Amino acid sequence: MQNNVLILDFGSQYTQLIARRVRELNIFCEIKPYNHLPEDLSEYKAVILSGSPFSVRAEDAPHPDLSQIRGKKPLLGVCYGAQYLAHFNGGSVEGSNTREYGRAKLSYVKENEPFFDKISIGSQVWMSHADSIKELPENTTRLASTHDVENAAYKFNGEDSYAIQFHPEVYHTTDGKQLLENFLVHIAGVAQTWTPDAFVETTVTELKRKIGQDKVILGLSGGVDSTVAAILLHKAIGKHLHCIFVNNGLLRKNEFEDVLHQYKDMGLNVKGVDASARFLDALAGESDPEKKRKAIGRVFIEVFDDESHLVEDAKWLAQGTIYPDVIESVSATGGPSATIKSHHNVGGLPDFMKLNVVEPLRMLFKDEVRRVGASMGIDKTLLGRHPFPGPGLAIRILGDITPEKVAILQEVDAIFINGLKEWGLYDKVWQAGAMLLPVNSVGVMGDERTYEKCVALRAVESTDGMTADWVNLPYEFLQKTSNDIINKVKGVNRVVYDISSKPPATIEWE
Image (cartoon, rainbow, N blue to C red; front, side):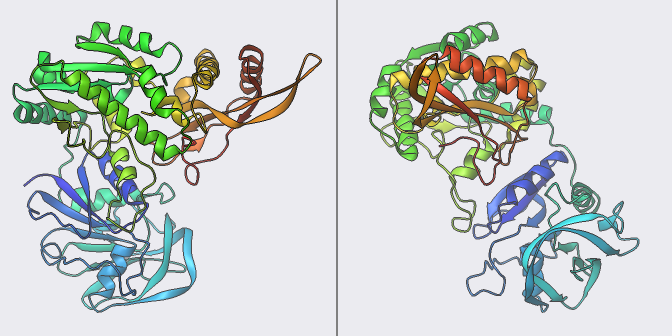
């Protein structure tokens, strides 16, 4: 029996946050679509049912068979999950006159109830549903209420099945983490063994078993994900790992040389490949964001295919894919959740490329990747690097790509990023960058009228990239940065600062 938790996804945009909160308790969990239950449930010690955009009263409502779960494993239904357990077990779920959304406070909590241990009346919770449970099923006990929601939490008597109408995973539910701990640790008895050191140990063992003496090609980017993946693989297979760092012509200023120098002392076998002309040719005249991403992904594959043929008997292609890449690229339920954007390193390889894919970080969130890297002794400066998109500056240049536009944006980006470091702001920001907008604006320089480019600066705070808030950078910093860009970068006469959060905006503009 493994100490794993299964999260069944019914399409809620909050499902990934449930996983984040469970991982914070040092408990490993996996998200699986509600309509693709794992055949072998023995490795899971508890199950959580997520929320959903569906109504349980709808004909097409998700309706999985839980006969192998309920009453046999500790079960927690969240929002839709709670309504599902009520509706299909004799309770009554009805539409609310008004959508119950936002903050609420517990007005009743059952005494001496382990599920609500250390949680008291007045604790804030977050509601997000259009239906309400009006009548509980027989053989259940109400555990909590709010002023507007009588059946905010309940349990089935004689079994470890619990249900809540609110979302414990969101920041606004004050004691949400405590509630999950009460359920998973104290009721389900799940051991808190999911630690960076444990991940390294089990992953290295699994990589040794999976790869053996085969040779592996890894595409390094200079970022956190590919670097941590490289060190993990190096621990497992040593000299059989062949790292390739590709200059796609869309990197930051001097990044190709800087990254190669950075890896020099890490014991990795790294080869630099300058394919910038090849990428820029593939992007010539293309303005559509998705087509640009796919073109870059295609050329990356072609370059790696060429390089793999130079490594005799290479059998594997390693990638630094992480969990948010997978979640954003593929609908978790095969329907209810929308695909946000494609990622160049997600989705497998074309048939002509005869390499197997290995992704040692596929189940990790970004902050977990950093903790794993720290446990392996990777330099803090490298681990603290901001995320940089795989397609590089191509998705920060809105519209078509030209060498001239790339050169302009590289200079703008360098001024912005170096400024953040000089002002001691870099480590307070999750990700930052500049966007070259497809508009010209009128300006005045000296006594002459100009008609030149506008750039947008963006800096966000986040934990894992799933949500993000814009950073309130000092006005003095923004003023100096704007002046430096306009005075030093020929072709730019206007600078703006992006103050939108994710959602509704994504971190990148394309």
